[in-house]
Length: 82
Image 1 (cartoon, rainbow, N blue to C red):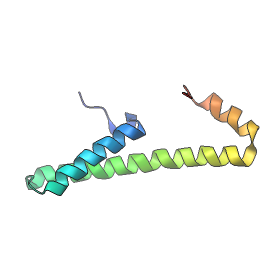
Image 2 (image 1 turned 120 degrees about the horizontal axis):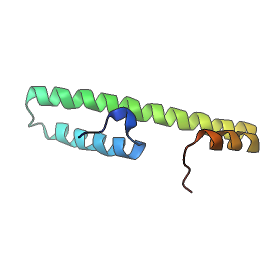
Image 3 (image 1 turned 90 degrees about the vertical axis):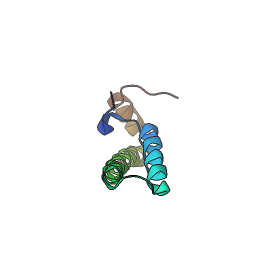
């Protein structure tokens, strides 16, 4: 069963996007398959952009608010791996 894009981690999304780019770059796919992959690629790109924007916002909060923001972010995060 395929994982929904919204549930994918950033790295998983990037890997999937790289596979799509490679497949499209070969140029030997049927038109419908190429269009489907292109559409999925756009969705993956948007998902990655959303993740990066969320992280950028959290990091800017940390740099603006110091230790207070770190504790807020920690409370919002389910699991932090260091």
